[in-house]
Length: 161
Image 1 (spheres, rainbow, N blue to C red):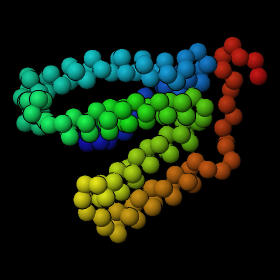
Image 2 (image 1 turned 135 degrees about the vertical axis):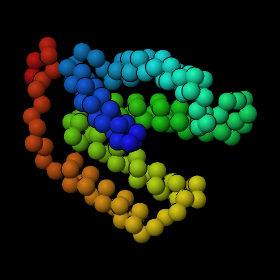
Image 3 (image 1 turned 30 degrees about the vertical axis):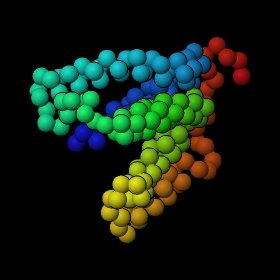
Image 4 (image 1 turned 90 degrees about the vertical axis):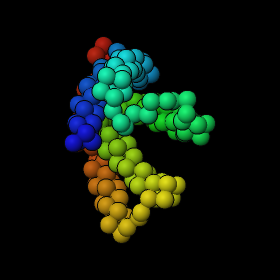
């Protein structure tokens, strides 16, 4: 249910972001800065509620005991690669293209990459069913995103075509 909620939230959020980016009044880097600035305090509040007020068993109480490897993976993999590099690439792509093409490419490659890296790097099980599912996801993206565009983009406000 949480994954479904996340997907719905991202879908709504990215449609709003695409509309703003294509207005020509805010660029992708400003949009990321605004998104992150708004999200970060809300994320800290959620953390404090879950970890401190609710004492959720899923939240480890002692960050200092996480170890150097976990900090490096979290900082580099989640913070730099997923948090910054992916968002920069995604917002830049979104500022240039249609959401109906950009979003499926980015958000279908993510699970395909995760399934393959989960298998190769984390030792998760790989089955014919998983491989077929990844293939179907990627085939769906190809069908959805490649080929002639059916959308005519209006010029950005204040910009003469």
